[in-house]
Amino acid sequence: MTNTLTESMTDSAKSITGTFADLSLSKPVMKAIDEVGYETPSPIQSRMIPYMLQGKDVIGQAQTGTGKTAAFALPILSMIDIKNKAPQVLVLTPTRELAIQVAEAFQRYACHIKGFHVLPIYGGQEYGSQLRALKRGPQVIVGTPGRVMDHLRKRSLKLDALSTLVLDEADEMLRMGFIDDVEWILEQTPDKRQIALFSATMPSQIHRIAKRYLNSPAEVMIKNKTATASTISQRYWMVSGTHKLDALTRILEAEPHDGIIIFVRTKTATSELAEKLQARGYSAAAINGDMQQSSREQTIEKLKKGRIDILIATDVAARGLDVERISHVINYDIPYDTESYIHRIGRTGRAGRSGNAILFVAPRERRMFYAIEKATNKKIDRMELPSAKVLNDKRVDKFRQQITDVIAEDDFKLFTDILEQYQQEHNVPALQIAAALAKIAQGDEPLLVKDKPQSQQRDFSDRDDRDSGGGRSRRDRDGGPRKRNSRAEKAPDEGMARFRIECGHKHQVMPGNIVGAIANEAGLDSKFIGRINIFDDYSTVDMPDKMPKEVFAHLQKVRVGGQMLKITRLASEGSSDEGSSGKRSKTKSFKGKGKNAEASKKGFAKRSKSNSDKKPSRRKSSKD
Image 1 (cartoon, one colour):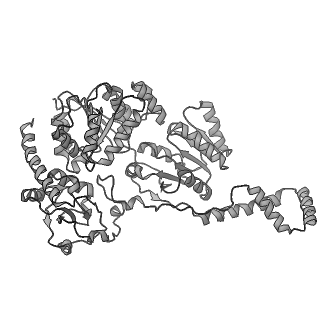
Image 2: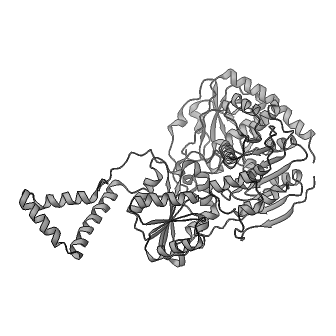
């Protein structure tokens, strides 16, 4: 294979041009794209898809949140041979969460391809279900390196018919210690296969793999725009417990605003949300790519003149929109890529004016949330929904103001005469009559609201993981105090022992990093790795009591986050604080399943043998 990287290009300043129809994708895929609501390809999609369709090896250097999953999934699905039930595509990902996410994306884009099957395989899931699914003949396998290796060794996964291999987030796999496994898998693939490598950065080891295994690849680099106006206040709301629409209406009712643009992902959603808001008494209108240009211009003109206050739009329909009175941009649906987020919130806070951007984020969308923070280089603050008291105070004030306005402006002598006559006939106090009329005017909708019970809201900064793939919580990044967690005090389960490793929060390690390193290097199934507690400068991990000496010695030299483990056995629970130079921090715990000492012992023995065979076979087949 040639080691030359060719056709390098940078898309740092190129605007999105063309449509998906220009990319020669198959009809079933195009139909799915239309239903999903994509209107134009992102920069990495417009550049990568043509190369993928030509069968070329490609390198995509892009951050999470640029739309790279669609950049490889759409062309792969356009070329897939449905009649062939053998695995034709293998996608390697660093974490199980990303494997599931990528598999779901394939399924979504292939909704009109009959007979298509995609299978995610990863550690922590029992082998039986994976073996049965593999026998059904999935065309696409999405998996983590360790579990893919296991199936290749067991011959339950065969790559004879493989036509495309995708390495997703290669630098993350390097950081988690999977890079040797990735090379081993690469050596098991056919000589003639297409490779697509995606990485946010290109460290020397990733560049070496690209030179060794890719054949004259086309290289596409996407540099995200990071500039957002300093006059824009950015906040987010975690969408869990309270329904999106309820949260939106509370914000609209309590937040002082002028004109508002609400962004949704699909063209259908613009009309649906506009109708729901109109039913709640808001002057709202939809705008999307299916509307005639003249209709769009009329709608925008109404927004400018104040005849409507809320515009529900898709990304394309609102691109370049400049209306002075836009005080808020609300991301009702999180965008597919970070570039779209920057374009969206740029509709407010223009020409030095202040603006507000609010982002709705579901728990499963946290990867995109982190990508947006990274792309904008700005912390997004969590907002609190207005309480029932705040809403009720505003409603009462509004009601009083309506009374004042009517008294000041209207001639209601006719109604005065009618009410005087009613009062004389029924001997009812005037105040009681007024209250009855107010209730009639209010209708079935109660004037005051009650707080609905909500599920406990946790800030993303308090979460224990970032897709089990690394990176520290916002609290860690900001250097805030960490509280002691009582879970760290629990003794190891029967048949397990506690070990100390010399890496912690300051080395930016997460439970997934530790599990990945130990599972791969020690040859120990992840289910035999127990509780993990991460402190400032060290961590503790529960593993089988009967660890072979050679495995223990090997783990001494294993690195996680660039830090050598230097593993030591803790003599007692009370010694877990020995030698710690820093304060004990908030712990991050990973509760494993390993309780059976005999099973653990067998797991070590079986997989240690497998590991001892692994390195010679890699050296034997080395092409260096």
